Length: 127
Image (tube, rainbow, N blue to C red; front, side, top):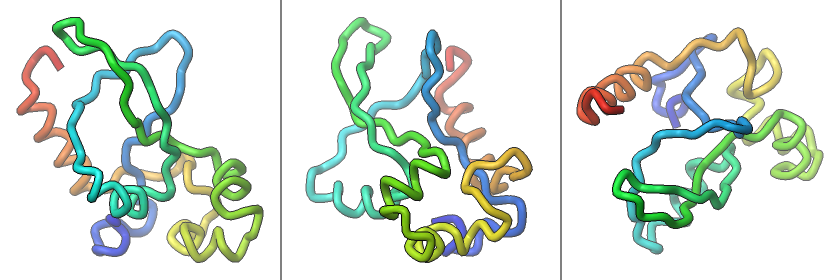
């Protein structure tokens, strides 16, 4: 979405994406989403894997929630594009002409970093 809106370009294509790491926890914000908005969210975040993950709130309440995480390049090509390089190019490859979606040479999208900093500031020191 950052690309289609002209907010990302060149090597400034990166945003934060959850990646599984054994023994690690992730501090997140939980929110409810009306079921009617789910199809648009899934379409907008198609490049991300939807996972059902357990959570524990600060007060101790527990449950499960959807988490959008990363695919590896090979997984995305295989699982989302059926191994078809043309489908990959049409969906995401055209935005990443240097190759894979997740690469160490990419820099963050400036407006995305600003939104993250603002959200952290609102969350307060405990975050």
